[in-house]
Image (cartoon, rainbow, N blue to C red; front, side, top):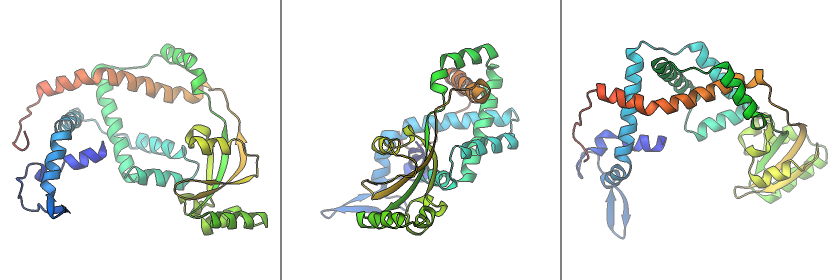
Length: 286
């Protein structure tokens, strides 16, 4: 969705004629060129109307939040940010996930701030709440799914070739320190942290790697091949599965239930905002 937004918010391109200023050839096929404007025309026809509606809705919600004088609680933004970051045992994993999402810590905090404000807006407009009885009933119904799964403390060294992987294993057998080797050899983001991947549940790993990791003994080292290269894996400990405790999950559970209620009322609320708004097409694509 972010990619679509980036493509479709290029307003000058979307509304430009075929030979608009800045238009250019972007590829040649047997001597025939395809222009940038042609690509944008195709994207608009395929994705534009739906994406435009989505952007209108987002803008209406932001305007309603400003009109209501709602502002994010910086303390809550920081708490939510730290909670998200704490889900990653290793800072490198958190940073890598942000990069894969095309985000950063600043962008994530800005998104959290907007989420908090929009939540205040919708909850206030519809007087939404989650009763304690509802919370406890949901906990009992979902108790099994809310349990903490078994986790393994995983360490990895990622290299490109099998020869490099065998060299790493040989050095480990000779008594080399795994963390030092990871810092020197690993191409994975965790390398700078000694290859420490943290405690991971099976469902966070690809199926084949998950099977291998959770069949390994503590201290055991194995090499696993992938399309990208070779992983030298080591397991150094485990945490058994643990039943969910109400006091530990109640805040997250309350958030989930509130989100469900917000989702249910949002379509009607957006229609109400649209009825009150002045939305005028200003030209561009039909």
